[in-house]
Length: 75
Image 1: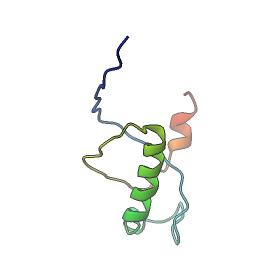
Image 2 (image 1 turned 90 degrees about the vertical axis):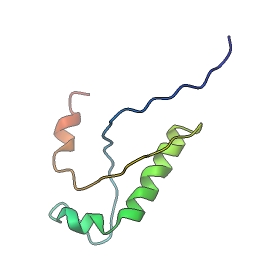
Image 3 (image 1 turned 180 degrees about the vertical axis):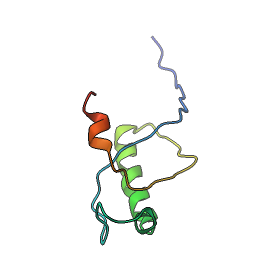
Image 4 (image 1 turned 180 degrees about the horizontal axis):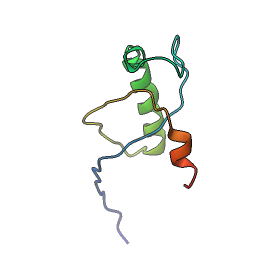
């Protein structure tokens, strides 16, 4: 059987825990967004590890997630 390359381009939401200097759960999204390059770098490091064949991120939006533990409980 021959391997073929496939492409998937879903609208998807990722959740990630990361320590960011000077930001905690009471911070505003604005404070988190001041660390865009740091967060993007860690996000891409994790995705590249998961998908070594490659990926492309067309847009990148982020902010504090205040309830992700509850959302993931059933998964």
